[in-house]
Amino acid sequence: MKFTYAATMRTCYVASMVQAIINTFITLLFVTFQHDYGISLEWIATIISTNFMLQLTVDLVSARFLDKVGYRRASVVAHILAAVGLVELALLPEIMNPATGIAIAVITYALGGGLLEVIVSPMGEACPTKNKERAMSFLHSFYCWGHMTMIIGSTIFFVLIGIEHWQILAILWALVPLANAFFLSRVPMAPLLPANIATATIRELFSKKIFYLLLLYMVCAGSAELTVSQWSSAFAEEGLGVSKTVGDLAGPLFFALMMGIARVAYSRLGEKIPLHRFMIFSAILCLACYLTIALSPIPAVSLFACGICGFSVGIFWPGTFSMASKTIRNGGTPMFALLALGGDLGCAVGPAVAGFVSGATGGNLRTGILVGAVFPAVMAAALLFYRQRKGRE
Image (tube, rainbow, N blue to C red; front, side):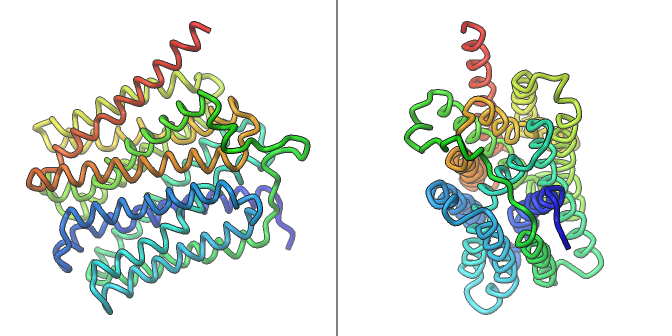
């Protein structure tokens, strides 16, 4: 069977969904880990940080070796690591110290997640498409659809089978990256840059002032997205007093839906809406959502703000990648890897700050999210600074 570049794009879509599975599945089990294994809120925050700090390390290392290894080989290995990590998550806590077993599993699939973070966007960017900005936004929307599929599927499983059998579900989710690894070994791979264009070195990238601003965007994007996304289920359960099923549906599911809507909307309307203006609007909306989640005395309003926050952060990640591709045209693999590093740094720092602040204030997640509002505030300020600078130029 002969595969086309359309099949390559489909494997990129599934790879984005795999990223969502490995980043989000464990968040549905935070309260279960606390109750069944006696794992503290601070240790859970450490697990989140471990996941994204390892992904960050892979981002940094892959900037140097990925072009030599090749995207096909690296993408297959990334999916296998994701599958093995999910299987370890199911098995290791039952045969060794639970906290240690969970940490080992997180380390394994974090290595795969780090590779996927670097690989997916360049693979999609390299495929022949008419409008790169819109195609990138649509590609990143599949992270949201993967997030939603995982939450809906997991919730149905927990209701019908029981959350006490979550280990079976972890093994079932491992089948997704295994299947995609098979197709990735066969689809065509397009070069990221034409043969006559030399890829920028890391030193060249850091010699450009705009690159530092793009990195700041990515740090804020990762922090603003994951701080609410990672803690929304636990926030709904513990802070708002709703059941786990309602917490999962009203928290991360609503968040993912709105984030996906934002990305698909821009992929369809991007020609009519300037990217930078839409990102500024989104950053200000994100800040308003954070403040509402943390300060509103009405639980329903806080939950609604969690969902709208998903819409507000939707354009940050793909929008920054698109801006980078347009402003640094020879960035290549090093640029995508370093931008992914910045995003993963934000993904590690944001939820960890919220978790540790919450733990220090007696488990008050509202306080942690209030402190996390600094990230969308910085994002808005940086975007406005760039617009003002471009206006002067």
